[in-house]
Image 1: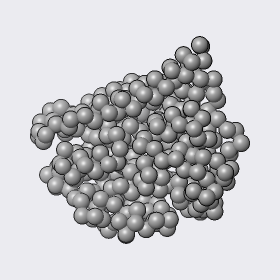
Image 2: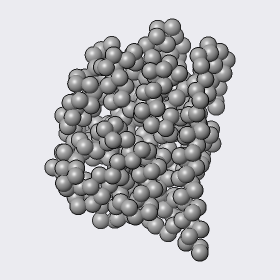
Image 3: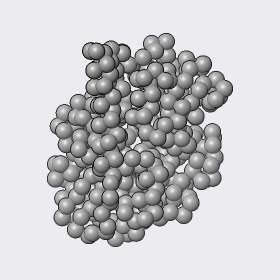
Image 4: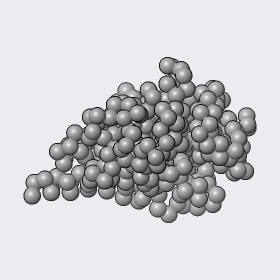
Amino acid sequence: MASLLSRRRALSVLAFGAAGAATGCAGPAPDDPAHLTLWGPPAGPTIILAHAVHLGLTDFMAETVAVRAWRSPDELRAGLTSGTIHLSIMPLNTAASLYNRGQDVRLLNVMTDGLLYVVSPDAGITGPRDLKGRSLAVPYRRDAPDVVLRSLLGFHGLVPGKDITIRSTGSPIEAVQLMLTGAVDAAFVPEPAASAAILSGRLVGKTISRVIDVQAQWQAVVGDPAATLPQAGLAVKGLFHRDNVERLSRLNRVLAKAAVAVNADPKAAARAATGSLGMPAPILEAAIPFSNLRVVEARTARPTIERYFSTITAADPAILGGRAPDEGFYL
């Protein structure tokens, strides 16, 4: 009975995360110049947005500023197309693909140097080659982090579907749930889902670990021990940018300050972000040190971003819409 209750408690923690993200995304309000919504995934960089709002750093942007989470890249794309989303953190490959396909989307900054991990109860997994013959749950097929995984596997000569079984899921939390129930051997997820897996595992008597640090592995893929993984950043609709150039430049500066504050006091930042991300504060607090959060202007980060794009398109040129974005993409 005790183990059953623990299992239910662990799964309820994960369900809270999924339900919270869904609640945060429901029913976006129509355009209102007095109200601004900053969107992001239920992942580490959105903590920066939430903490900036909590600290009052974004008050200059509108009379009221809120942070809400989208549930999937498809929902993000729909919001951009319909005009209900003007500003959102998104995977860089998503932003570039939208830009190359004619969407009026530009990149304002990069907000993480990488927050992907393989988590598993299997201590025999210590590197990518150890995934051979195993099953791996991966969220968001043909989107981040799936595109990073395929580059990583290709570098190590592993073929998905042949050397390793991939189970695609609709969200990182679903990937974690599959691993916790034993349906797969491991999960390839971003923070805070990796921290959620570790903390939830303790409730069911499983020792879950970050068995592969994808950021460290990425350095081997690109052949540079100092390389980072510029996974996500804040993108903006072009019309909104043209109407708010000075305010968005200031927003970049205050978000950089907020990122420093998040890293300096994860507990306070987690409390500020729990409602927006729909995850318990202890999970967010545990995730922050592993999320590599910082804010760099897109133009400054362009060389790193272009190397990232070059690497992922080597595995699949269609990921970015057939080409790398031109200089107009970078603000």
